[in-house]
Amino acid sequence: MQRLQAFKFELSPDGQQERQMRRFAGSCRFVFNKALALQKERYEQGEKKLGYAGLCKRLTEWRNSPDTGWLSGAPVHPLQQTLKDLERAYANFFLKRADFPRFKKKGQADSFRYPDPKQIKLEQANSRLFLPKLGWLRYRNSRDVLGTVKNVTVSQSCGKWYVSVQTEREVEQPLPNGGAVGIDMGVARFATLSDGTFYAPLNSFKRHQTALRRAQQAMSRKTKFSNNWKKARAKVQKIHSRIGNARRDYLHKTSTTISQNHAMVCIEDLQVRNMSRSAAGSSEQPGKQVRAKSGLNKAILDQGWAEFRRQLDYKLAWNGGHLIAVPPRNTSRTCPCCGHVSSANRQTQARFECVECGFEENADVVGAINVLRAGHARLACEVNGAVMPSAAGTHRSDSGAAQCPRLSAAGISGLQAGEDVKTLLVKAWRGKRT
Ligand SMILES: [Zn+2]
Image (cartoon, rainbow, N blue to C red; front, side):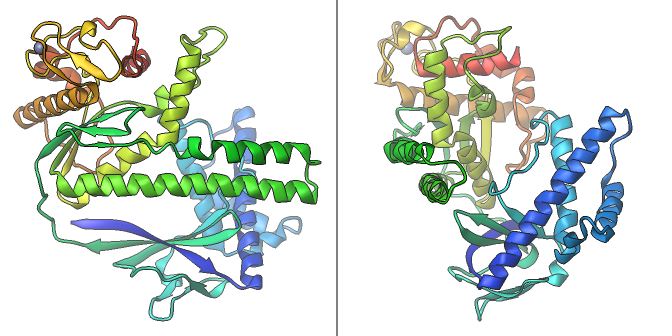
């Protein structure tokens, strides 16, 4: 089995190298914006969009023209890579996976990539790395890089520079440990497993909220673009990056533990992107329950559900396991004991009590059990009919489930007004699909 993996380190550049890196990142941003402006202009004039080869031709012209000749000071491969990024941004837009490509701003995700491994040298024993036009760069060697280097990305965040080394290597297909488990994602508890264990919410954002608000207020009192404003802005950015680090750390630890101990993980196929879309809605279609939803959106984004799912997906694949996404139908209101479906089963947010048979359990655990059941049903359908999708694949949404006779037999229709978060989630999910 082939494994692609990235290894990220902090760089320790000297002054000259830092200036160069800033310059290269700026050149890439300039090329991206110029190419995007060109494509927009061509579109407005009714001309065809330029392909990658056409853009590369233009890049050569820009590098040779006296106005933008400074571009030739930057390495050419990263500049071309930027054009590829733009192509991909357009492709994602046409496939409705992303919004229309936007112009890049200085200081937002400054980065550039060297796509050609032949130009990169990595000396791990000496903790240094050679990159074209930058020379030998020292890095904080915190772990071994495994596999052959495919490409290298240099990026800046909060005044620090990082290098991400993408590698490829052949690993033996491992045998997964443990059995199957269902996960219920929530706001009160980040994740609840069907065996009863749960992970507390991180709410990294909430914890730093006060500090962030103060820093933002301090920044707003400064004259824009003054030196004091820049200092205040650096403080705000630092808090943002701390929040990001805490969240990433938590998500990685949780997803690693779960994927190492289970062969099959079932998760609700919640479309986080749609759920977290603006609650206010548009002027033609004003949103419902705006306040409740915007609070929920914040919680969802804060906890990084989509990122958690992505991590579970690839880590399970690495460990030989499978991630199975099931549509979130009535998972919070079906009794796992007798199968009775009713919103009356869920009297409070935390407690589940079946009105038919009297089964009592924590509501999140019930949700997780139902998710696991749906996952088993889904698996049975796939084994009988369609091909089993690879664990690392991203296209495993609802299409299979919709045709699955078992699931639609078990799927219970008719959701009414929701009083709890889960119902709200399910409604948001369904609303997007119809
Ligand atoms: Zn029951």
